[in-house]
Each structure stands twice: as C-alpha cells, then as structure tokens.
Image (spheres, helix red, strand yellow):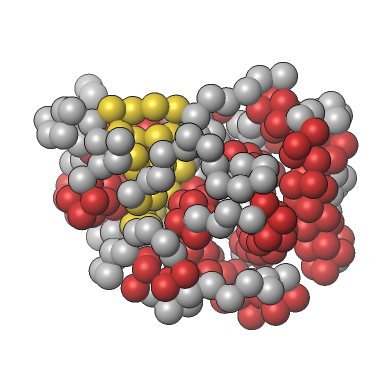
Amino acid sequence: MRPLYLFSGLAGMQGPPLAALRALYARPENARYFTAAAEAVASVLDHVGPDAYRRELPDGIPLTAWLRGETPDAGTLAHSTVDGLCAHIYQLCLLQPAIGGPAGDRTVPVAAIGHSMGLAGAMTAGLRMTSRRRYTAFCHDLIAMTALTLIRCHRLAPPRTGEATPMAVVQGLPTEELRELLTDTPVWLALANSARSHVLAGDPADLAAFRAGHARRLAEPGVRWAYLRSTAPFHTPLLEPAVREALEERKHFMTFPLTGERLAMPVYVADAPVNLQHREDLLAEVMAHSVCRPLDWPGTVRAAIEDCRPDQVVDFGPGPAARMFTRESLRGSHSGLRYRSVPEPTA
C-alpha cells in the first residue's frame, strides 16, 4: 500500500471531539501524552495571562477536567480555540509511536496533507518520530504553540454582528465567479475546498453586507450560504499579526528546531514550492498556512496525488470534512483511490 495521510482542521459542525479524546485519555498507555498536553496548555495560559482569554473563555481551558467528564458550556465548546486545540490534540495522540519501537504493522505513508489547522498533524506525521518519549516532548511544544497562536488570533478577531460570524460557506458558485464578486470588497476567499465549495472570511459586518449585496444570486437554486461556527476570520491577512507575534514568542515554548529537511516524507501545500521539505522555517510555514494564508485544497490534493501516486487515503479526522473535500476535488479522476478512516473511539 501507498497511503496518503489526511488531517482535518477545525472539527466544524461536529464540534470538538471530546468523546473521542475521553476514550483515548482512559487508556493507560496515553497517560504521559495527556499529562504533557495539559501542561502545555496551562503553560500558555500562564504566559499570556487571564486578560488574553477570560472574556471569551471565562473558565480558561481546564483540559484534564474536560477529559475526566466535566462538560464545558455551549459557548466554550463553540469557540474556535477549543475546537482547534481539541482536534489538534486528538490527531497527535493517534500519531504516537508504538510503545517500545516503530509502529507495528502501520504502513509507512508516502506523503501527508492537512486541511487548515490539520497541517500541523500532517507535519508531525512527516517527522516520523520513533521514540515515544521524544515524541511526547515534541507534542508538548507543538500543542503550546498551537494554543498560543489561537489565543493571539482571537485578540484580533472582530466582534460578531447579529447572526453573522467571521466565516461563511458558499456552495454552488464556481471559483472564478466568486472571486469576481469579491473584487474590491473587504471580504476574502479564505478556503477553496472544491470547485464549488468555498469559505469566505472577514469582519462579520462585511460578510453580512456582502451577502445582502448579492442576495439574489445567493438565493438561486443550487446556491447555499451558511455562517460557520468559527470565532475568528481564519485564512485571511487579518490574522497575520497574530502569527508573527506567536512566532516571536516561540523561544518560550518550542525547543525543537524545525526545518523542512527534517521531514522524512513530503508534506504538501498549494503554494510553490508545494513540498514543505523545501521550506527553511517549517514552524512558521505551518502556522501561516494553518491560520492566515488562503487555502487551495484542490491544488494541495493534486500536488500530493501527482507527485507521490498514493493508492489509499488514510483519514485521521476528526470528522469527515477533509475526506469529503478530497473526494470532491478528485471527482472524475483517480477512481481507484481507496479511503480508510482511522477509527474514532467514542465514550
């Protein structure tokens, strides 16, 4: 087999994968990992101080309490910091090296891709670490950087406007038509998920104005508009200062040097050079592509398929979004490609 590893970003409509995380937490072999994850999150909250997160997350992020069964309130569960962090911690747990050595019968992947924040999981898979202790230490640092970046992003997030949020999905419009409609507007085409599925992002008031200005076209048969749960305008230049700030603070959290040459296999993005093995500052590239650069998913998928010729897609979730967009992007081609999901345990 020639598997391509696939990672989703925010869990989206499903919300954070708490049930799956609790099932993983209950396994004794994962104790060290979850201790490191909780310590990483706590260290970031101590570093930024309560003023950076209390307004939106009044109880902070008590990860261990949640894993032991405490249920966050609805507002906390809907927050993108919690959503993204839980998805990230879930994926990294699944990628742990086998106890005592290399992962048994796990087939070595030929490449990895990550949708939005799933790129951090793809990068981690690409490192192919074999020491469980070293891997856990690395995850501590990466989880801390992810938490820090998400918190910094929300300091820049514009306020909500009625039902509008900072991101909205538009289905049924071709990419070029949508780009034309967005010309000279303060709204960005944040994610191209497939030829006719896109996500717009920006100030909620600007999204609401765009929707009102094109109400007739957006109401035509086959066209759909829906605001997403996201609490920040991801994949827009609005969040570039947050990524820069987080990277300036990395000396407090990231002890592992990360350059593209450390990747043992290709990890793809759509921007040339598409293979992150050729990027110098790997952490900066991953954070930027995860948070503030636009996402071209069909381009990413094509780069991975054409370069590495996988025969199987192994989906690490959480949720089906990235797998669904991958199928849509490949519709009419690569019909022999098989899909397999890494089992998501439930409580």
